[in-house]
View (spheres, rainbow, N blue to C red):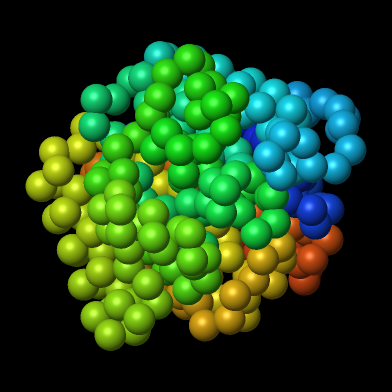
Amino acid sequence: MNKLNISIIGVPTDYGQTRRGVDMGPSAIRYAGVVERLEAIGHDVQDQGDIRVSQKLADGAVDEKLLNLEEVVEVSTALANSVHEVVEQKKFPLVFGGDHSIAIGTLAGLGEHYKNLGVIWYDAHADLNTPETTPSGNIHGMPLAVSIGLGHERLVQIRNYAPKIKPENVIIIGARSVDPGERELIRQQGIKVYTMHEIDRLGMTRVMEDALAYLKERNVDGLHLSLDLDGLDPLYTPGVGTPVPGGITYRESHLAMEMLQESGMVTSAEFVEVNPILDEKNTTANVAVALMGSLFGETLV
């Protein structure tokens, strides 16, 4: 295991959706002992604290059904700038959400540093909605679409470039709730998806082997992990805003993280959608920290 200089950035925002509490996710993850755990593995860890998140600027949906557009743009821009600085300092960005809209900012901060960045999107949802297809107006259902250059111009153009990533470099793992518009976009854009059907049929080992081999064939020069805790079955992660039954198990998720660590390909990561209000005794934050342990090289013997 290589010793890493890890910079933690918290993003206490719930503006990408409508269920309160996910803004406390970064605090819950810290309370679960993430810094101590990563340091015990042997990494240097600097907690940069939280991105400043303003109080709500407007009420309701604004501009093309997008809920809290102004607030999401503000948070995403601040996060993008912070992630950009961390990468410039040759450190590993580890971002804690907050809802999954924060991936807009994370990927905006990363994209300038890579010519061919790969992304593993570990999630029950595809997050590929646009203003035209969204059934809710919630921007946490749009970050992957925004990052491949589709969506509201103010989101797409954060840090003044687009797209941030190539759709053919994206792999979604664990999908089991995909909207019709997202399904069509997946086909159009050539995005690789391993639904729960593939995980059940092939097993997580085969899925991860195939995913990593695919990204190596694509010659990616970095790999970002965007992990939504609702990718796991809600039996293991009750504290998420949009739980979907029939998800990835706790052990399968550890295996996936261990295989990512063994690959040596991961260059950044974010863990999102921990909602302490919906949780049970900080269970979901504890799972998030345990998975980070596996991702960063923790072993049993």
